[in-house]
Length: 346
Image (tube, rainbow, N blue to C red; front, side, top):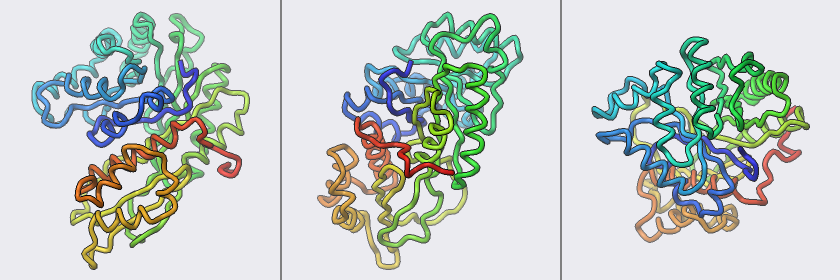
């Protein structure tokens, strides 16, 4: 399924993430296989709005289309929330979900956790009937009882891809140990499996930075370790595209901040609120840095440039869009060196 793909970003269906991917060139999109975790679109009356946003962003490429359980039973508008919640029904092997995916051009289903052993068999049958392959995502918080069924009937559908998603952490050993042990389970059961390795380490606080600073991004190192450990396996790089789980609490104004992500680290330009600095000030600081000069032409770069003209970035959503788009652009590049020897974690 992933032949010719060098990068698998995991994106949630939020405006910043959708817009950042939508703004990639067609060549850049074609170098990726995005996986979208869907939820009800904000203020939408029907779930179809989410589907339309995803298909509009993806264009003609294939992509994974999952449903984000964190938003099950949420407070979105009706009937949108009910339509979304109905996709989690385990009846007939999550038939409602697979019927939904079947109506989305180029969408590949994600295995839906939960349900009985019979539901698992029925779900595999639904995926096989759809004929687009299947994405099985392993996380540290959800057990996927599918490897023990690898040799059973019905078998796993053709073009099954395994995503080893270690989730968010700033502890590289925590991410690495779980990732390596999970890959071992997969390749022991299915030696020729396609495996995507992903995680997220984008910091949850930048309070120590005023002006310019850098933060490490751990994902390439985790991937480099996995590739070195399983050098005969089909392992592909993925990540959360510089996003992290939602945070709650901690009110107060957020200082203007512009980020320039690189591979393995990120330049951060954060305002001193006591000095009354703005996004325009941060854009000026960022554009004077050599990291900006090395950026390819892309939507994220343009947003930073337009900020100096009074447009571009005026709040956190546009700043997030710029960062994600730059990250996607750099990781979709044909010469991207991800998981190089110096990133290896021993």
